[in-house]
Length: 433
Image 1 (cartoon, rainbow, N blue to C red):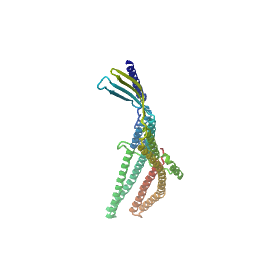
Image 2: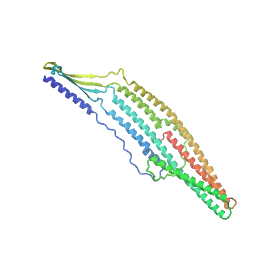
Image 3: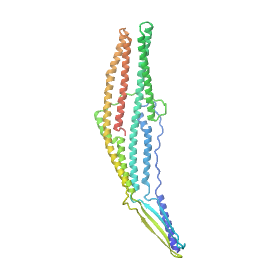
């Protein structure tokens, strides 16, 4: 009787060794996080290119998207998992009654094996998730860049507007001094004083508004670029944005569907949903369990018999095949593909609309800079010469100067609108994505 017992023990050791090899055979894999980029040296004067580079790397929304991408990349570990699962152990002990010597026991060791390729399906689903995360990161970078550039333009425009309003205030103070002198000489009236005081107060209010707008724009730029609070903000002089041709806009509208991160993200979501449906279908196929069975049975009052063999267990996928989960995944994939087709049309129209706004703003800016402002400056000069000759009241000079400054302020607002349209055109066309 010792030989069957020895055979049973030897078979048990072999089964345990096989299970141990299966458990340690897959090399341990850990997701490797991307290192955060160190803070680089900040420029003294921010240019458009400086703002774009900083926003695409350091904006809050970009870093959140980068962390979401790292989570998706961690799913690649599924591709390195072994095809075998956790071993199963079973023990059966049946004491004899009333004869306790008729003890029967059995030991089983099982090892499930993935026959349907669930691991590969999970790996493909994870890769599709990485594609979604990458496309969304591109979209967030483009949005962060547009947000930062808009704040940069607002800072430059607000500070130029502040300079214009301070010139208007200086002119109002000069007029007030002249009226006070004429009033002391009896050559003016209290009505004249009230008029120049109103002009000065309005100019002071406009200066305060320009200062407020500049501070708000600077705070928005710091937030968009993740800069320390109250850090000094100096921006380069802002000229008119470049004017694209109609052919350039048409080509950008056609190519936007393949460049925009939002469209590629919707397409990747569809691929991820399809891969998820495949994975759910394969998970419905139970693994094949290969077992090593050992049994000792009492065949007499003082006699036992031992046996050792193999077993196979497999759940037949006839009823439950993840029909509900796969139907939902299929619907999600169809919805994502439809969403991608809709977005392709939307982004094309966004490019065309942004191009039209840019063209209109640049046309208005050309009229202001080439005709309206020179005419206003000439009127101011002529009224000043006429006033110097004693043939005109000072209020006419003051009015001409105010009109010129108002046109200059309007030109700045139109310049800002042109830049916002240019920024929207770059974002909508998927430039540098």
